Length: 98
Image (cartoon, helix red, strand yellow):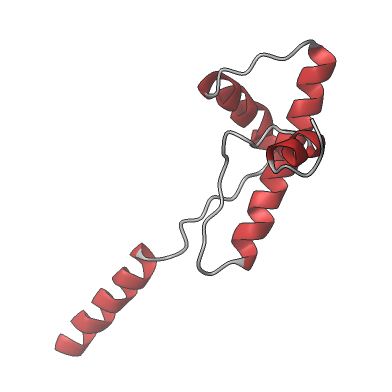
């Protein structure tokens, strides 16, 4: 009985300490984007600008999923930069002149 209890305890610990990394589904992207816009107080110039940033956000979700799948030691998630276009990201990293 003690061995069985130990096995159950080990399985419970393994389940609890399992992978809790976020994984995002494309079907949830519109809702996630709306939540992101509200949390980060985003205001876009027009619908075309909003669409461009939505597409960048969806791309970020894909990158987050890929990075989390590849890494055993780090967890990646949505940040305040998740709607940035590649050009905007370059500017934040000092890779292009302003």
